[in-house]
Image (cartoon, rainbow, N blue to C red; front, side, top):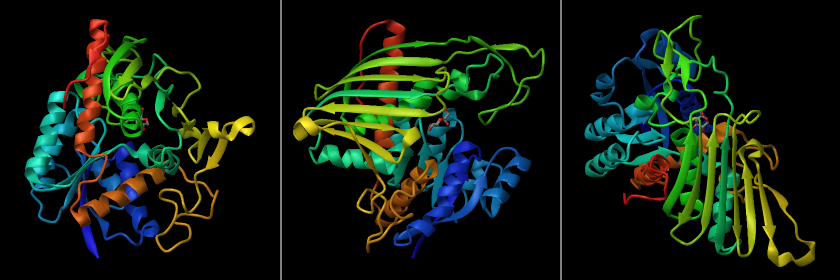
Length: 393
Ligand code: SOE
């Protein structure tokens, strides 16, 4: 059994999600040609990195990327640091001959994203970007149904990614609201997921017309650098300028003629993590909502006057990621539902196969650049107030 020795950079939300996936993969995917070995956790702050390593199951902690990259016993570097470090870390890891697994968005600019792709291609390493929602079984089932022609020619794509965690004016100047670190706001953080799904399920996007707004323009500054989602500023703290979008809407035209709409916001009161899409085609429609992630809704026009949207429980052994190769459930018996973490477990499973078979998986850094190109076109369109062509990758 091949082992893939992992060095993980970052230990906040995504660092935890990835760590959990590495721990769970051997349990649920015993048949893989390679399994992960959690080797080293890398973080800046000694105390917090050590505590996270102990909690998540990393036997060692290091405090500089250099130390991580010069180690012989690391095969793959997993990057969950803030967005502005992604491209640079990808490049350095690739130059050190390490395989790369990178959180989204790939970069804070298209230029940097292209440089990251070039680096992994030049180094000939395996690379993957973490758009985990592709591997919710219901979403993978939607892909299979589209590829099998069940909804025919796609006419419409409609996506919403709605959260509300930034609505309080007291929420401080965390890195996610600073362009220099995050690149953008709800655009790169949330709409990037919807764009990735649209590119996968419908096809390439030709042009976009986009608008965005920053509803709360100043927020109290934190005393120390915020690495996670939280933090509280001291009473009377000086105010900082928010220079990313709080909400974004976009119209899109796909190269195959389909029409698309996207909306992403952190200001949709009551919506905690609504990642929703609907696709309408010549033979039917599909609907998905992450908050009911085991279900895929399907409408089939061929069923005449007894048709209607039906709910498919995407937990049958025959559904993507649900069955073992020899038969029987991979996870639990049918309708014993899966959660958010399983999207990461399924992703890491495919990453292990990719490393073992030396075959670049999807979505890879080329997909990351494609998404980045759409993000850049959205930014251009919103700034110029007109439709913008998606740049070539
Ligand atoms: C925060 O808005 C966040 O954690 C995103 O950064 C993730 O990409 C998304 O999947 C959930 O929400």
